Image (cartoon, rainbow, N blue to C red; front, side):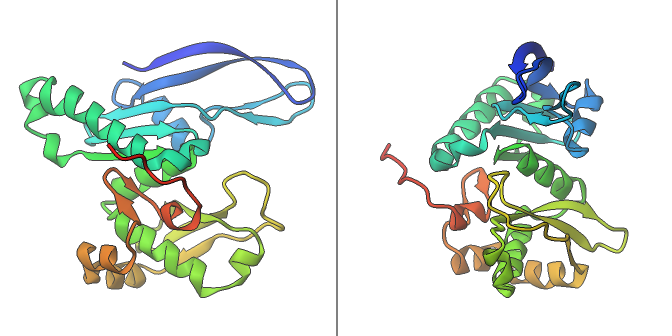
Length: 237
């Protein structure tokens, strides 16, 4: 089931906010929460006094048995420990789905998309990728190429691109982002990548992409942020 509870917050203006946040989402039973993720409204609250939007960045487990999606969401600040959280979500999946779930679910375990995401923007990105039957490793490689193609992205403080739409003709629309840290010096318009670009990169194969960009994917974490953000070394097991 989905687990939602009320928490007290304060707006930056000092006004109190009583909001509902989710610790876990069962997208089959509560599709409105899935829609909130896709609409970028989940855990975003508008102050009735000043109009400022407050975002809550907290751990979340997202499960959709019909679409075979299993995502662990961590706050963006946990990126330093990406590999630790990647292993953790894999262990949770193995325990709760691959081993302890009903037989019908266990039989489908190998078909699940299992990922750790950092922030709700990355969760939305992965949902769109999987809903359109794309390969997220290919999408992350395309993001790397787009950001490297124009030095203005770095100059403007862009740290990543979020996939926000896939058109009927397969074109991918990506939104430049600074991960909400305020480093982007000016609004940057969305980037549209033609489907032919995706197909050309996909034709390289996953092994070739991994070989060309070591570290872009480790376990359940597949993200260009592994390459662009400094992270502490993972402790030895």
